[in-house]
Image 1 (cartoon, helix red, strand yellow):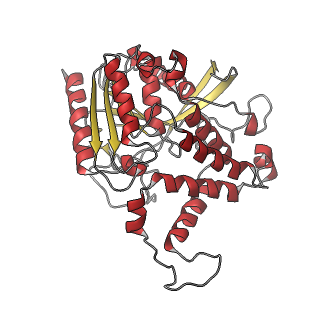
Image 2 (cartoon, one colour):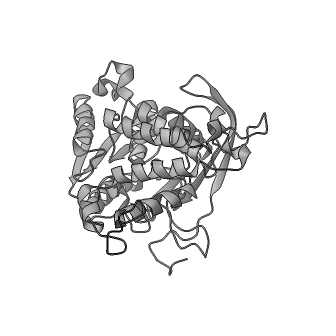
Image 3 (cartoon, one colour):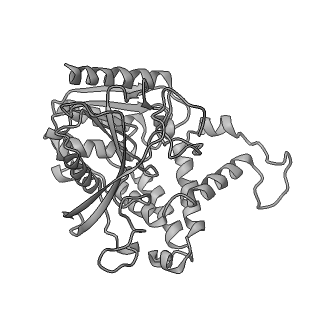
Length: 381
């Protein structure tokens, strides 16, 4: 582990909720006897009113902060923002970070064994939606004895889950913090996801999703999917500043192997992703992204979709994010205003792109720390 940091939550042990009940899913199927893995940071206060739920994005999991062991060199995916004195301050909040159902890292998913057949779920695992994830997270809330989340917070796909929480369980969420999200995917974003899925599905090692039983992984397809996705998470300016047209060996070799530094970087990102993610999970997660559209149930009116919400909202966007651009966040804000909801909005000047929500730009940190300080003060009075 890195040198001790007083702002780190330290070593964290994941916990597992074994759910015995049958949960209905939006696709019309049910799931029985499933597990939800989660981590917690900070201390739950006496009246259980200081709990904050963190919803993860596509490639995230339950390990949002701290370290898994003394030897762990890499902290959780949102460690920069969760901990004592940080943006999500564990001196004030009890933070709960679950791994979504359908995942690859503990919660029941395609790589888990089906309790009835003893075989991996594989392609038989049901297709999920944001509403399904929120439904399972609500079971976790009840198991933890939390009456209402002080806040639910998430970026990207996590922000979509935050919006779904405000609609599906309005009495169980006091503040909804939506970061770098959109009210639904654009056709372009759906197209990116479809190309990524086709890269996986057409890999010869995919075996119709039953690659576990063949002892292989569709490495090439998953690697290509990650390479494509990673390009969309970065801005053009960020890629130009980081790589430009730099050559790996300082000269052109007139071939099809890696020559430019950006090619080397993307291949590294793709290869490392294969070792820590599941291909069937990638298919499920991207489909959940595609399906998210709360206004679909209200004739296309996002304001009407938000009608049940009672939470106060904080919406944050980043100027360099072209995948979920600021105008998409403003659509959310406009709909909330039209629905008569309380909403604050911040557009943060940034350089990196969509992944800015994982970082700690001063304006971003100051905005959310100030907002969450007010939330903490509410709970302390």
